[in-house]
Length: 245
Image 1: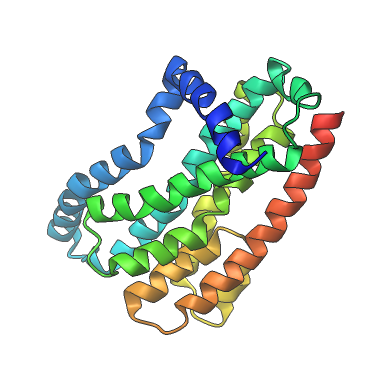
Image 2 (image 1 turned 180 degrees about the vertical axis):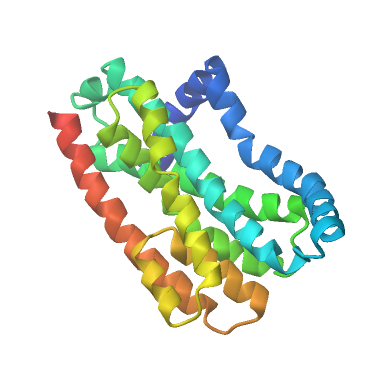
């Protein structure tokens, strides 16, 4: 059974499940809404703050754009993670164990779908927000560096949440992993690398390096991908245990 057969079999089912769930439908367009909000609100915030305090926020724009690089794959990982929770509640995952579909093919489909959506939507959202500092190729590199965050989020929900309510609680609690790396902006190198213990640091560092014209963006991308893929592998092994439990 090849990957195209898996997509043909599971793709329409996922599409119907998303259409039936209003929360998931809105989440699919989340990056677009966030980017549009930043595009229209950011200039107003910059103008108001500068008028009232004299502080120019424009040099901090890459900090905001870096957050969007993280949000896109995480949102799509959440969508597929919630689909996995529904499948577990419906005992679909149990039924899959007696079908011809190998677990590795199922996992590959589940991992690749949100990662691909993140890679496509991240540059789109950055263009929509009007990020001028980074080329389209640079945006794509940042999107690739953040792509494993999608399956990481998906497996995190599938492994540690018993239902959607717990899943939402876990997402809120884990939001710290999206906020803390942004603090690295205010920490000079080489001390900033201490934030590298968090997988969400490396994609934003890639974007910041590209925005600043630094030469180390590829190194940061490779380092981040290595760390994230190790974590995805660990979560995948844990997910297999949950499936066969």
